[in-house]
Image (cartoon, rainbow, N blue to C red; front, side, top):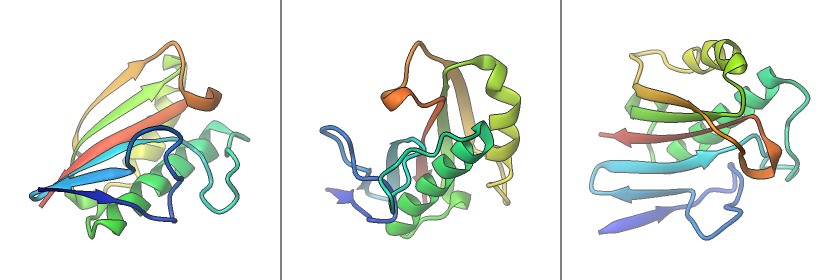
Length: 125
């Protein structure tokens, strides 16, 4: 049976979806953008700050389900411009300590609210 995961420490969904869904021992985390959950405002001053906010939001959803970034087995990164890849990749990599999850990075034509990066993940125990 699936369980919906919700936390106030990450942005509320801006559409008909859940922050995450736990099924058995697998957690499916919806794409996170750089929306500050405390202020409700986007963090877009720099690509670095934006990427850190995305990762903090992912981490908050994982923690709400009693998972950590070390439990992540797969990430999907969506970016507006592949020229931003090296900056995003360096920051993203700094959040994983045990091992790196499988991943793909895709340049897209558009993302919600005009952000430059969105990341989703799958975690398992």
